[in-house]
Image (cartoon, rainbow, N blue to C red; front, side, top):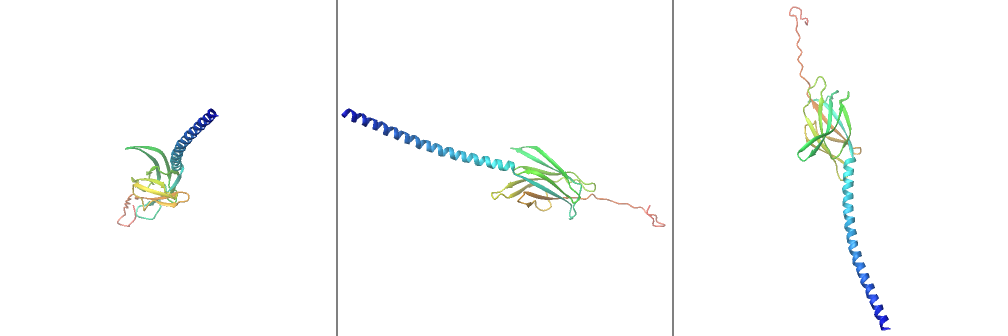
Length: 195
């Protein structure tokens, strides 16, 4: 009987040691599981942010005005080029271009947020000077899901405006100087007729 009690006590001791070891392993496993869950959450949040920035697009409307006047100008060609910065090095990405319509407006679609763009006139209408002004801007989406525009350089007529925050549309107003024209007419002094 004493041998059976000793064996029972020994088995009970082994069982308790096994239980303590299992409990200790489960605590370690629980800590590791918590750490893995936190890391997974962080990585998933980063993935969603990158996915959001890559996939959100907006449209740009450009309104072309005569310098100092409220007159819109047709037939101006503009390009928008993505500028890719890598440290101090800049490379040019995709370029889109369009021509202002008879109302002096053009629209370029599907630009991406969190990317730098450069707007430049590449061909002016016949009676206007080519505008050498280059406008650089980048769009951000704030925590409320609203579009924000950061103009980095260049001159615009007024500020770059967000015209439709629901559909992510912005408007940029630019100006061009009319070419100076000189008209010379010669008249006959005897009968004031134009020659």
